[in-house]
Amino acid sequence: MIPNLVSIVVKYIPASSLKSSRVKLTFSLCQKSKTILYSHEFNSCEDNALAFLKSKGLEPIARTCLPDSNDAALLFSFEDFDALKLALFKL
Image (cartoon, rainbow, N blue to C red; front, side):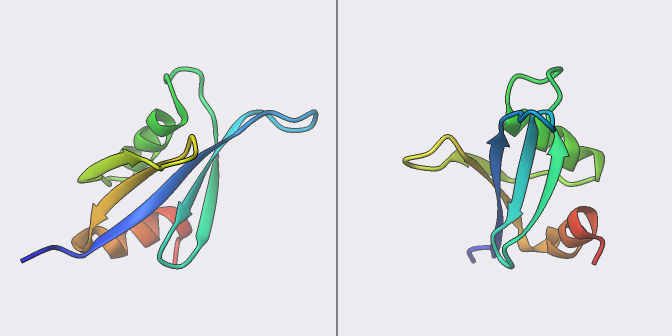
């Protein structure tokens, strides 16, 4: 049986004159997003997103780069769906 999957798209947002660099996490199922600060402690925005999600007790089952962009996608099994919503959006 193939498990249900939920993806989060990870996008780098460069610094502006008012804000520092950020990472945007978009929950593809409902198009809600959360923006976190970019930490130069990590090598990429994807590593920033992974550290944030792991701090919330979430572990993706796969990750991939999206075609024709610098964005990445993290995939979670459906069992993590409720925990994922709670961690990201406090629903």
